[in-house]
Amino acid sequence: MFSIVRQTGVTQATCHGTCREITFRFALAAACLATCIPIGARAAEIEVINLNDSGPNSLRDAIENAASGDRIVLNVPGGGTITMLSDLPEITDSLSFTNPKVSAVVIDRNGNGPLRVTGGAIHLAELQVTGAGPDIVLSPAATLIGNIEQITADVTASGRIAPGSSSSIGDVGELIIEGDLDASNSIILIDVRSGPASSNDMIRVIGTADVTGATLNPTFAGSAYSVGDTFTVIDASASVNGIIANAAETFSLPSNPFLEASIGQCRSCPVPFILP
Image (cartoon, helix red, strand yellow):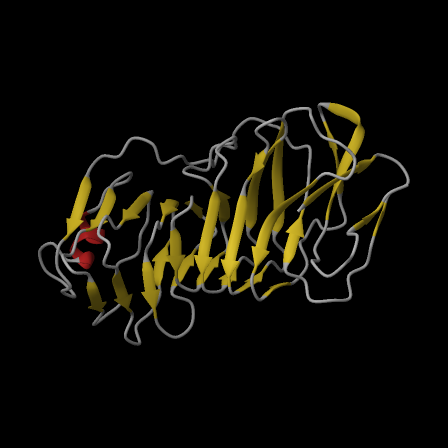
């Protein structure tokens, strides 16, 4: 959560309870990073129409043949479970998934390794992956994006996490993960907008979130901020574990030289910040 406070005499309160939320605000309003990878134009849609481990129109075949920007469509009538007989191919570039059917398609790793993403921006949409240990692992070169759709899997992301339909600055969205999120040492890109239609990026975890060593990298838009404003950017139903790497920093708002924001990390604290 971002908390807006006056610029002088601000002390952050100490949390002694179970932390479930992170609040945050920063004045980093730069141009889109060179590593910002929007998923815009899609080269093709590749349909998965069966539950086979391999072969034509299988999930494995779709990943093997996908090019950067393609979308894999899980279009299996009646849904069902794909039981993997070996590790799936690595995803090395920007790719998205979608499941237009009401019936879900579940990927059972069946004792095999996680789905690995080693580059590009990945939009997992409503992908469901089950197994022991992390189900989806994103390397430092990969970016996890998503908005509204619920990923059902335990996710490890050591690269960038950017809620929204792309990682572009200003694309506000809510990334939902049903499972545990290990965001250790990741870079979490957050947009916050003030004004009549104020909104902010959100990472909602239905499970436990680990943010040990992660860096919150926010961008603020608008000028209608006030002392005491708060913006929750990470929420976990179980707990948020670990300390954000830049948790002690405070940040100025370019639109208002008399305000600054600080990172808060506790739901149980009655007041996350002490105002002057």
